[in-house]
Image (cartoon, rainbow, N blue to C red; front, side, top):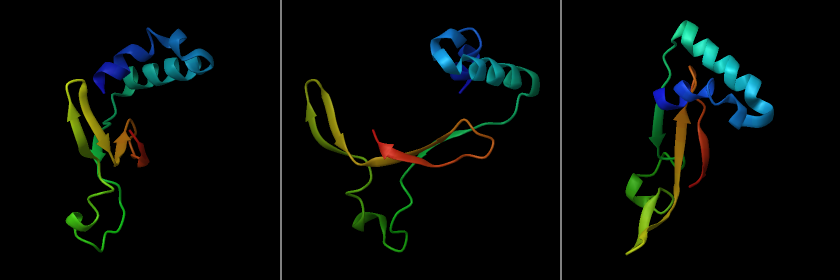
Length: 91
């Protein structure tokens, strides 16, 4: 998080039409130093079932090659917010 917060202001032009937001967030974090967090967790699905019965949904390795790993599944990325919001999507 420190890496992202540290570059918002100096690299605001990178964000195009959102550069004012980048500068505002940069200034906000410099002045207030709020606690923010990041967590990568399994998606909240089928909570009544044990993890081994829904593990095909969670991110997992399908195949390993010389070029790297082939993965399938989903993770939730909770970050950059005093009150995190779970954003689910395929990586």
